[in-house]
Amino acid sequence: MPIANEVLAYIRTQLSTDVTNIDIDCNLWTEGYLDSTAILELILWLESTFNITIQNEDLTPENFATVRNIEEFVQRATAARAGSQGVAAGS
Amino acid sequence: MPLYDLIAASAERFPQKPALMFPGQSISFGDLDMQSRKVAAHFKKLGIGPGARVAILHENTLAAVVFFWGILGSGAQVVDVPSLAGIETIETILGECKPVAIVMSAHQRQRLMRARASLPGIVLMESALPESSGSYSYHFLNEIISAERTDDELPRVQDCSVALIIYTSGSTGRPKGVMLSHRNLLANIYSANSLVGLTSDDSILVVVPLHFVHGRMQLITHALLGATTVFSRGFQFPQEVVNELESSRVTGFSGTPYHFSTLLQRTDVATRRFPDLRYVLITGGAMHPEGLLNLSKALPGVEIHVAYGQTEASPRITYLGPLEVLSNPQSCGRPLPGVLVEIIGEDGSQLVPGMIGEIVASGANIMCGYVSGDEISSGKIDSFGRLHTGDIGRIDHHGCLSLLGRKSNLIKSAGERVFPGEVESVLDAHPAVRESAVFGVPDPILGEKIVACVVLEPETSVQTDALRTYCLQFLPLVRTPREIRIAARLPKTESGKIDRRRVEEQFQELSMAKAHQ
Picture 1 (cartoon, rainbow over the protein chains, first blue to last red):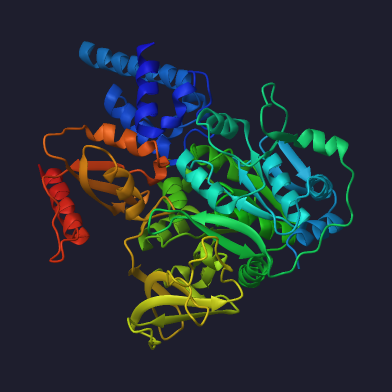
Picture 2: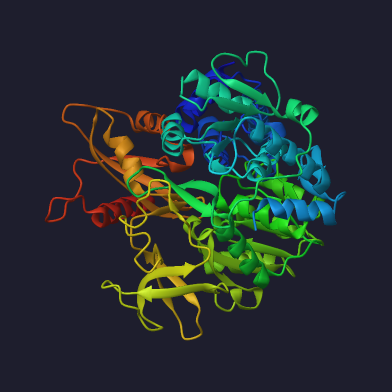
C-alpha cells in the first residue's frame, strides 16, 4: 500500500500529529482528527504529489473519508490520466 | 432570565417540533427539554449546580447539545473547550477554569488518556465504553436518561451570573476564557434578532463547531425562536454542504468569509437553486466587495446580512441589512440596538465621524470579564466598562462603521483569530530556531494565510516540513503556519525588536519575484 502509507505519513506530519494511531479505514473527519481547512491542503498535496487533478465534484466523503478511500481515488485518477495519455499518444 | 428558560418555553409552545437535526438523528423540543432536565437532575445529585463549571470537549453531536442544555439547566457554567486544540492548550484551559466535570467524546477521551492529560474527576459521555474505568467517575447519557426523573425545580440563577465561557486566542499565546452571562447572551440575541427578523418558521444549517461563540449563538437563537437547528456533516466537503442546504430546506445559513469563499470557489453553489433559503449571514470578518457581489449573483433573491463583533461582545456589535450590503460593501453596519460604538484616538478621546481610531463598544452584551481576571489590566475593558476591540475603524456620517485594520498583529485565518505571538512562542521553542516572525498574507479562501519566517541557530539545519510537524504538536492546523521560510536574518527596529512590517514586505517581494520567474 505505498499510496496509503504516503498519504498517512503526509497527514501525520503536515496536518495533524494526533492521527498516530489511526488505521486506513478510520474516518478522518467525523472522528474529529482534521479540521475543514485540512481538505484544501490535502488536495493541493495530492495533486502535486501524484500529478492528478481533483475537481470540485470529486470532493466527496466517498473519495476522501478514509485513507483507503483516498488511495483508491488516487489509483483511479492516475489510471484515468494514464489512459488519456495513452489515447493521446496513440492518436 | 436564565438561558434554559428558552428551551423550556419552546418545549411548551412546540413540543413535537424538531429542535435539532443531525445526520440520521433528530430530537423534538419536548424531548430535548425532558432529556436536558434529566441531565440537570443528575448534576444536582453529583452536587453540581450554580457556580460550578462543566467543560465540553466534544464534536457537534446531539448528545453534546443535550449535555449543553443540561449543564445550563443545572445552573452550572459551560466551558467550551476547542475540540481541535492541542493537549497542552486543553490542559491550560482546564487548569485555569477548574471545571468539576467534563463532557467528552470517545475520540477526545482516547487522545487525552493517551497523553496522560489531567482531567476533572467526573467524566460524562454519550454511552459506555468497555474500557471506561480507572480513577474517573464516568456517567453516560443513555443511562442518565433511562434512570433519572425529570426535575421540575431547576435552580434559578441570576441573569448576571456566568452561563458560558468561551476560549479565544490571547495576544500572549495563552488562550483567554471569555465569561459571558445569561444577560450578555440574551441581550445580544434579542438585539440582533430585532434587526434580522427571524421567526419560529426559520431554520438554519450549522457548519461551525459549537465551541465558537458563532456556533453557540446559532443554537441559542433558534432555541429562543422555537426554530429548528440543522447540523451539517461538516465543512470539509463543501459540495456536501451545498447538497445539505438544498435537501434540509433551511431558510438560513451563517458563516465566515472563509465559508462563503470556499462555497463560491469549490462548489457548484452558483448553478443551484435553493427555494427555501431566505437569508445568509456573514460574520467573523469582512468579505471582499467582489466576493459579496459574487455571492449575491450566486444566490439571487437571498438576503445577505453582515454582522461584526467579537467573542467578548457576545459577539455582535454592528449589523448591516440586506438593503445596504451591496451598496455599502466596505461597511460592517451600525451598532445593534443597546450597543454604543465609539471611535477613540491614541489619547483615548472620542473622535468625530470620518476620523480613524480604535473601535470601542459598550452595552449589556459586553463580557463579564476573562477567567484570568486581567480584562482591566490588559486594557481590554476600560474604566468606563467599554470593550476595546483592538480593531481600527471609522464611522461615516450615516453612522456606518468600516473596519480599516487592527491595532495588534492579529491574523484572521479561516475565521480564527490567531495572534502571531502564540505561533512564534511555539517556533522559538524548537532547538534549531533562533527567532521567528509570524504574520498573515492575503489568501483568496482563508482570508489570511499564516506565514512564518524563521532564523536558525548557527550550524543547525531543519527542514521546513519538520518545523511544521513540530508546530502541529502544539497547535491545531488552522493556527499552524501554512508556509515556513528560512531566513538568514530578520530585519529589526532601532530598539532591536523584529520589524514585522519589513519582514512581511520582504516576504511579499520574494513571493512576487518567485511568481514572475
